[in-house]
Image 1 (cartoon, rainbow, N blue to C red):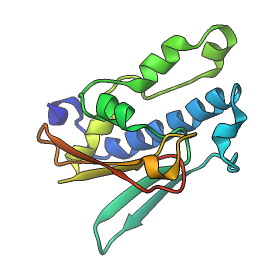
Image 2 (image 1 turned 30 degrees about the vertical axis):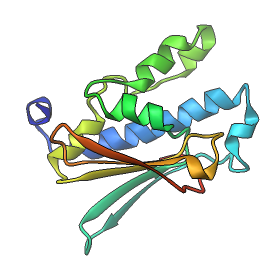
Image 3 (image 1 turned 180 degrees about the horizontal axis):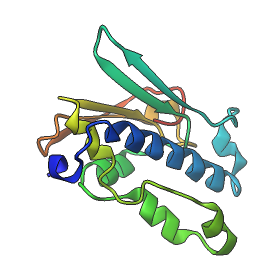
Image 4 (image 1 turned 135 degrees about the vertical axis):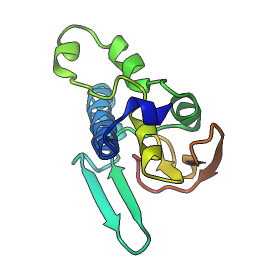
Length: 155
């Protein structure tokens, strides 16, 4: 299904960066009511790293991250978008300011166009380091998930 949705193989990178940007925006909005979510790291960032030897591309953000339940809900179901749900809860000026671009739900899955396996390491802002989550799939419809130590929030 994913191959029919995307004709350009490079689109996956734009989609992953969009998701990271959305996670940073979501944290920024949630921190308006709870600044402790910044966890002494208010400088939001996105990094893209390429390892030619390992043949891996890693997109990292220090945005809101995901809990175990959010990982299952958002990554475990194709075309499900936590961004859309979050956006629907914003009101008035918040909606005008929130330009969340990953609302279509299939962006993350474009990763499987170029990867045999996708691994996501994440921790929800405000949760303890022991609440990190590792999600992994080969895109075949099944995934593995486990709890892990993740000192920094984000994905």
